Image (tube, rainbow, N blue to C red; front, side):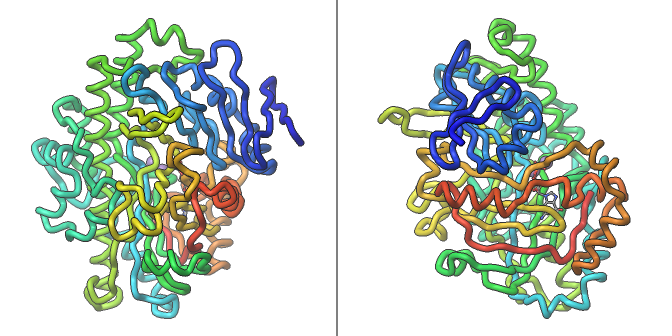
Length: 485
Ligand SMILES: Nc1nc2c(ncn2[C@@H]2O[C@H](COP(=O)(O)O)[C@@H](O)[C@H]2O)c(=O)[nH]1
Ligand SMILES: [Mn+2]
Ligand SMILES: [Mn+2]
């Protein structure tokens, strides 16, 4: 098949897994979808393609707006969308970053094997659920005041290090070492800071989770070795973001940008893409506030990891150091960052918007942590509570194909409302128990909304990423215990 028609949008096949919406009309560039035909059928099932096409009208968008293999419809811009936009002559769009600023994942390795954990699953899941705050609303690992929130917004994981919630190695194994230097707490509103005060170290609801997993497959032995991964090993995956604080930042700046830049808004086919022109005061302020929320999210995941280490110490009666509970890596998947990329043979500074997409820098890139520079940065792609999750490494082709990015998950195939019509929480939980997966959630509705059946086939998503050379598979894991907000 050389073309694909979906609701008035025609895509042309450029390569086996690259489909292009050609530039026409008001589009500034073409758009590309990276998918197999099976995934494209699912991607084309909602407004993803129209949203992707719309996003090429953002001023300064370079090369093409891109949809990753796990893409689905989002607020204005698809989840799974990547856009590299000129940081001098283009714009920055809060909707193309997402409401949960720096939603992301971190994986911690251990020296425990699956055998060590069997028989303890129930105690582990109960203890994690009791000790790691989750669900909508308040309550975090630490209660704090606005001054502390401001310090977190400014210093990120360095704050956690000083407070005894982190060790030096944790910082070395985090994207940007857990701190965006461009953060400006002064442009984060009082309301956002207030929302952040009592949620530091909390999972939040629904799609966010903490999962104990075992490594089931290793695909690239050498890279897995560098990452400290081996078959049958127990690892822990933490997925959450910047909670109410990040949401508030996105909400307020979206509104401000709409009001302050109506001329730009008028050029766009969808108000949800509202953007601030590069160089404007509002672009700088949003960037500073977003970077501050990024720091908050890194501290959030750090505190949850710290608490997880304590829970393991109690359940297994050993220190976390003895269990070698080390951070493999922490990657953001809702972010915009100023990065230098080669465009038509010239280096340009871009706002790389990755919304539901993961940075995937290859071996040799100077921003890959020293420990992984020879093999490429770790990329973590969760699947679902009933499917595999993956560790990849940034692929050789990622810089020219996707501004150094790949997928961030399996990606939803249905809305939460549809999911609740289709699945019943207790049935899903029983089915998972049959597969030796122990799940504890705030409600049955959460389990239904997050049933494995609501997600695409993660194996197919990472296969496409691997075939394209943007993110290469290193290891696969499967859930053992899962707590959900
Ligand atoms: N291993 C698990 N993966 C999960 C679970 N719930 C969701 N997911 C995957 O995470 C991504 C995250 O996407 P986001 O857009 O919500 O940030 C999602 O696409 C799923 O593939 C889980 O319980 N365990
Ligand atoms: Mn999130
Ligand atoms: Mn997320």
